[in-house]
Length: 182
Image (cartoon, rainbow, N blue to C red):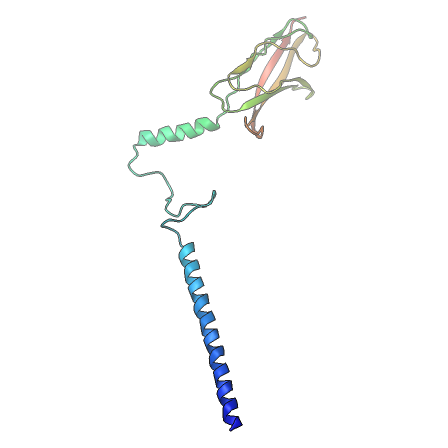
């Protein structure tokens, strides 16, 4: 008789264990379904700052005229351009006088710039500007060293910087010929 009672108790425990396992499996399946539905793109998905929109297609919108496409390409190229301007033959009365460097950061430039001038023969730095913002210029300035009378071949290197971060964007160079008169 006791054997039958033990069997019934064991069967009851086995049934409860089976129900508990089934309940856990059902709960896991429900959680997986919710997770899958939440992670699928489309609908009311809330994007983080750098999520790509799954609805965005590569390329430009159809129906644009060739002129509209060209205007957009020109605008992109213009934003990345950096124009430089300096007197190709600056003149100094003597080695310690100011000369007409005529360095200009034109208004169309999107970057701040610095200018460094070095002698071609020696590589010696003879001029360094500070930051020149767009729509600013340096008409006349002195060199950092006194040059003797005569012509001096040099290179002016323009370095462009991002205005907000001062991050280096790029460089451009121009050959110049400096004249010291006395």
